[in-house]
Length: 485
Image 1 (cartoon, rainbow, N blue to C red):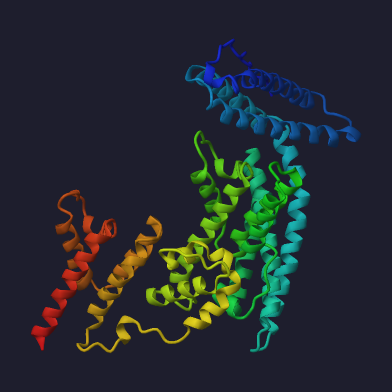
Image 2: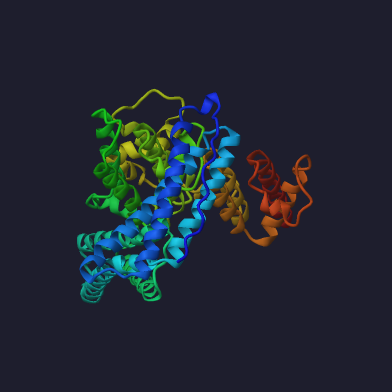
């Protein structure tokens, strides 16, 4: 591998507002250039003059660790450069782009790729063996179980499975972070393990379901990666006055945060949402790839709030959409459930909206979920079951049900609101929903655009417009049905 030329960092004078950052960014960037050049030289020497067998492992590990260390330092400097005066920022970022190219040349043409493959191979082999052992246990249990399934065995198998999924994700994250690809056989092995774990999870779901609501009612044992344990851990660090965490504490918390998404059956969505909340809650300046993840531990109170917000969002959506939720698609029952959570809460604060408070603080009231579900188990009438003085048709009832859900939808996230409302509307027959879309189009004259299917694509943008359109269509259908009698 031939070393590319490394440009020097120009002598620049920072402005007043950047004086706290510039004094170390500029020399650190120069130091990065020198370290990259030295690593390129050592990689060339490694290829030209292979080391003795007794020295090879130590030299290989050193080259790989130096490469990944330079990647981390370069990424940190990119973040720091954003705080500089625009002129200095542009100069530093231009130089770091050259550093990017130089590091890529080391990864792509030097011995580093082979060293990385050699380092991760034992991890892949051990993980593959553990996956095989677990899938054999799952297959044996699924094929031999009697009709009285032991849920605790299933939960234990699922916890084992989720830990292996986490280890697999850790391997993939290491590859993504270093930007060094697995070789062909390693890619095949990892893909095969992913497929086997997915198949094993499906087999377990067939006999137990991936149902957190059923788990609540049947007193499922708390996982070591549960949200409540994570919240307690963060709170204990806050109470202890921990402002700076050591690497072991960060590793433990990262493990818990990343593992929750897999344990709850929502992929990496949960941890990604936490990182998104951290980004949203943080003040400016901020930016760059994976900012929320990189800055998870800058502020423990912010991390705690991000966890609370994320759990609220996921729980609320699953309460309404999970096929096994006891209150799926039943806004009235959901409202009563949250009122029960509020009433059962030990804090029981005086608030204007108990339902909204319970939604936001559900993670603090996990011990009350079982009782709240039982309290609401008394039959709650749906639109179709109400004994109205004037019976209504299924089409009118479906429209009315959507309208009744609008107050709850107004408090949801934009994506969650559209997902639920559009899903309900698209279940209507063509002769019911198409006139509704047309009514939305007519009412939105002030802001609509000349686009194909605008009324369908934007029917949930404005809930006031949608409510008026629903009222209009309900009245129209009632008149038609009355005239047909």
